[in-house]
Length: 416
Ligand SMILES: Cc1ncc(COP(=O)(O)O)c(C=O)c1O
Image (cartoon, rainbow, N blue to C red; front, side):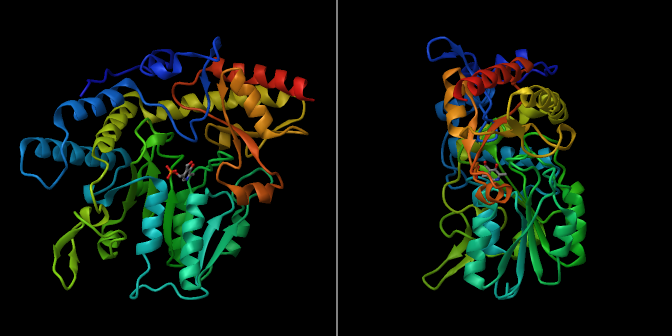
């Protein structure tokens, strides 16, 4: 594995680790990558750790008693410990490797409620209107299986959680609350510890969709007190195909496995099977071995830079964007003011389609996202069909934001 030098926070230095960012596209346009909410790029140490594994240490984990399998298994489990330490989980077996945030949330939706802990018709699952489809559809599917009802807390005009509405929808019927710690559209931060303390009054479980939080802001499991947390490696400099479900040990131990197959059992007979211990009972089949190793290296990289430093850097870019973008005729940024949000800037421009704007920006070398960002209910609630989204990460610079603002001014003038 490449040794990672301790770095002073400096985007210019950091960018040297990301060759993908240092390229001209469409012949002579310098690439500006502002689609980090969808997926981030990987630094060389992550790419090299994965390549090194494929070159020298790869084998399937846990099963073989041979040199390569032992090495892969050790690296795979080291990645689990890296995740455990990164989020301050008490036990490493509370960290389950899944294929992503989506799979993590689906695991809870399939396994938490059982015959003994039944979700009855009329019981409620409370979400917010800001959720990503990954944190809506699994609950709707659960509701369809059980007769439970999915409810949505609204937001204020500023794009923050409407506490009054949230509390009015909380009752003895609420069995589970599932919320994003940071909205992938508005950037809004949700006070998770407050949600958990409210939930406890009603004995409801809390799931946190931390896909946009863990990569960008320090995350400490015990400060939230939530039952489950989901996040994805590809949004935090790691590879695709791997994510994490954190769950409180006692809860996970009491949950039946979601997927059946190899690795998740302690024994199988022709009559049936006995599930294995944590974390294997939730990791059926061959896991994303090399991806876990890449994630472990991504975490090492992030820790060296410091997630708090990343948060501060993104806050600076967010302030700049909130200063420059609204100067553009008819442009409106969605969501709260910069101090109350993460580095996600969604906006609409009067009379212009989000797609047209994104296509024009792309031709200038600037990658943003246009559409509903997997949050159709939020866009319906806001009364808009879609929006543009620029989202920042550690390697973005003030110049990136300035180029976005300049190009936007041109496209708006041109398309009007
Ligand atoms: C808030 C939020 N939740 C969940 C997801 C789904 O993540 P994945 O596609 O990695 O499972 C995303 C991805 O954009 C997200 O932003």
